[in-house]
Length: 487
Length: 82
Image (tube, rainbow over all chains, first blue to last red; front, side, top):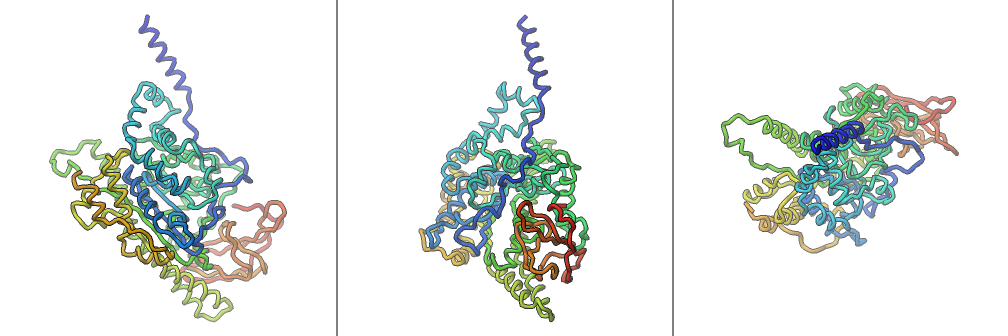
């Protein structure tokens, strides 16, 4: 009888669960007069002519901790007003583990960093996620469509940090940085930045999206976690299709390949061809989080029109901090002749593609951007030599691009810059996980600051922002001593 | 990089490719853009929702090309967007 009752209970639960729908994670735009999360609504800080961009890579808690350490180091750089360089960050763009730091920093600024460290970086997230997923209730819930594996991470992020807040909280905060959390469209293989202008393509309201959902989408490591699925509300009347799509559709691919490529995906969203957008770890497309800031600096199609701000002379300097927590953990495969199994091949193919997305962009972004500004200045100044009524204006625009090209400073924070081979290997071997031993967190805390400060361009940045002399920064040697090789 | 000079209508702010937060102008004005196709608009001043009252475009202007255009009136003015 007991067995019968148990079977009935299981069948009943199964019937109820089978009737559950997949979760809806984004809402349609219903009222266009409501404030949205827009760059223009966030006033600049004290450094009005200096654009400060920070990008944070993926890499689990290793990336979260390294990004947190760099923000703390930037907070030590004090300006004339008493504000810090961290307070002056205009844009933060992130992927995966970096998105945890980026999202929390956008909400609470540097004041939130101690909570980030206590409630997330020093917690054993893996144990919490596994415990949540493997208990009987968790297993039963995961058997239904209404609860997906990614919800383990969403719920954990909410419990530890975000407490169900949505992007609306960032609208209310009315402060920079402008937050760009980057996931990837798993079908297109293209970045999906959580911005209102991206959500407009889906006729969806970013302010109703939970920050934990966007962070989890950015960190949804393939296979281990399920994708975050967004609903496309097109066709709709509330939000017109962006005008730039029409212009880009008429543009020859030979003239602007990235624009035409992005247009293809954006049109598929805006035309309603893609009913659902399945989002995975942003690292699949760009593990540094640099692609969207680069687009903002070079495109004529986005509402964050940084390129026109440069042309008009409103932006004269750029400080670009790229935090790369890439690892090179050793693999037993290198020492075994045995044919790797399916799981090992799957893991390696995903991991390699994410590392490659990091490698190619990190090497090129600095030269790409500076050369682009110089090229623009050259083109404009050449045009200004021709007779015409707009010569003076052209000369002015050309000079503005040249000024920015000469005053763009890149600070790359990367374990590759650690000179000592054993120390470098020790940091490279920190696993990609949601749980790190305390000594590794301690080491990352010091190394983030040290790598920022030892960058050859660091003194130029201090000069560019008129930083006041402050306490000395940690050195790489000190950081290496904290994380003893093999420790 | 291309160079587009917008002449008419005079003394108006220009919006490029639907970026309505960031006007360029007043006309006549010169705009530097990436090579390709671009759409230019002016907006009514309100009250009420701002509507597109002039529009024009350039198509596939090659690198270092230049163009001079006059925007054409939109009668009646239409809502923003494609």
